[in-house]
Every structure is written in C-alpha cells, then in structure tokens.
Length: 439
Image (cartoon, rainbow, N blue to C red):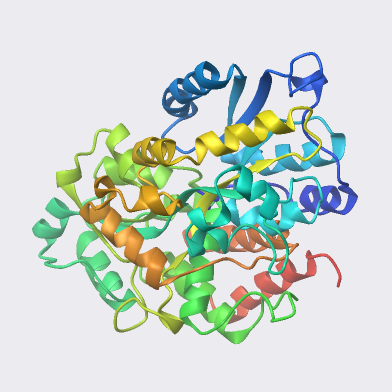
C-alpha cells in the first residue's frame, strides 16, 4: 500500500468487521450512484500525493475526460489515509458509501471478508480487458488465496532507500548501504549538527507494520502461521521489531522526535535536508512536489541483513500498492465497471502512475519506455525479485492496527530514553496479539 497509512482504532475495526454484511456503497443519501442519477458515480480516492489538493489536480482532469467519453459524471473525494479504513468499514455496515473506491492493497482480504465488495470473477475481468493484463505481483495482493479478487490493481509501489547525495559526500559515505549494519554505520556518520541519518514515522501504525514485516521476513519469520493464526511473539518477529525500533533506541540514527511523526513528515524532513536517508514507497513525485530535485538524491534497494536483495530471507519490501474496488450494491454497476476499465486502461495507467511515481500494474503500460528510469528500475526490480505480499488474511487490518500501535509505543519508549529489549518488545507484541479476534 501508499501508501498503506491507516490509523483506525483496533476496537472500532474489530467491531465493524464483525458486524459487516454484504451491503455498502451507492447510496443516494450520501451522493452515491442512484436511480435518479444513473450517469453519476462517487469515487473515494486515497491521498497519494503530498496533499489532498495535489491529488485533486492530478485526478480531476482524468475524471473530466471520462465524463466526456461516457457521459458519466464522477464526484471525487480524496480521503486521507488516517480516515480511509474507518470510512470504508462504516460504509460496509451502513450501506452509505461510494460506488468506486481506492483501497490499500493490504486491506484486500479484510474488506473481502465483509462481503461488501464486488468479486472480480472471470466475467467481470473480461469487462475490463481480462485478468492477464495485470502483473502477477499486483494480483497477489487483491484478496484471499482461492477466492475471486476483491479489487483490481491500480498503482504498484515498492519501498526503496532514498539518500541525499550531498550529505553522503560531506560525511564521507561513498556508497548507499546494502545491509543494515552498513546503514547504521553510515547513519552514525550522518547524525551530527542537528541532522540525522534516517527518518521514520514512529506514530504511523501502518508504516510501522510495513517495515516490521520486512524485518521479520529477513529474520525468517512471519506474523501469522500457515493456517492464518497470529504469531506475533515468534522469536524472529520479536528480533525484527527490536532491530527496527533499535535504529532509534540503540543505533541513535533516528531523531527521538520522529516517535511522534505521522503521515509524510519523514518525507518532508528528507526533502528539507534534515535527514540523509529515507525508507519510502515510490517517493519521487512527493519529493518533487516539496521542491527537491531528482539530482539531489539517489535511490537504492532497501538494505538486507547480509548480501544483496533477492529471494528467501532477503525480502526487502512489501508488495505495496493501491487497488480499485466497487461496492457490489452500487446503483450504477455498469458505470462503475466502465470507470474501472478507464482507470486501468493502458493510457490512463501511464498518466496516473507517472504522476505518482508509481509502477503500472498493467503489463503493457509497465513496459512503456517512460517507466525505464533509474528510479523505476530499482522499484520494478524489487517488485519482481525481492518483495512479498503482506498476509492476505481476513484479520489483516486488525493486525496492522494492533502491531503498528505496539511499535508506536516502543518508539515512544525509545524517545523517552527507556530501554527497548527483547523482553519489552515481546510484551508489547503479546498485548497486540490479545487484541486480535479469537479463532
């Protein structure tokens, strides 16, 4: 996900999912498609750019183009990530929501379990040109295995290491770090004069989960067992979280104030030269909008424990991205399907993914020469070789909230100078696991 940043309260998430039924979307009372307005759709877009206003400037011309082609007006609302998951879950229970919406791809299985989203079976995929138009890595994050996807891939992203070339040169760091030991060593050289080696968003639960997932994979562990049961206190998981938070607590290359950072604050610090390194999903467009030239920074794969990114334990990114979903009780199913076809067309995929510095999940668009830039080469290589999908389980959204909040609390401890140990990490993760629905 881009940017997969929800901060829904666990209790709310659990209760809404438990109560969810196969309703939602297309309500005339909240502006959705209605019997009186068959030529109208409502669309909730996720905040992909540096601000909601940036997204409106990107999307509105394309929606106007769709209206000119089809006669269907699309009413746009860009929803911040901090609100999006709760908004969607409320819509699944109330029946009052949009016709079409963006979802973080990590939420696909959770929202699929509500029964509110249109299943993308072979017949529905045929309406938008066929399932084989999409790359396999993107399709792997569209719902639970063995079920028809709950959404269609829209934007694909991967994490990368962004580094400030000038700050590296001034500190005598000649190459971007390939391992975490190298990153810590470089970070110590760079953390001086009120500037820091690395930025983080310790108060952003979903961002925390994304990094913890990668560290866990590198420790040969996962947060769930093969049968989908939470296993948050696995020895490898504990070691992974301890190592991640340890970049602040032990290595001291992340500013203590970053424990309070939420969405996009670490990107802003990097763009302003306050931090020398940034671990982020497809950040180029965001950095450009904040005044940073592409000549000012380099892009490298996210570090691994040893060696180089690749298969197995050297997973170095989650399969990030945004999916496009349809509430299945929309009053304008044909229009909603036509809109999905438009948004995933080769032409629109090139336009939208260029605007957001993301990678098209549509094969033909991804192969366009415009996506063969050095930055995209790192992201495409990561998605193809060393990225893994977050667990596609029904309780995934609760997992993000519970574990992400546990890590948020550990960052707060680190910022306050409290030791972050295997014991304290395990205690927080055990508490998080207790918040998960009983199996």
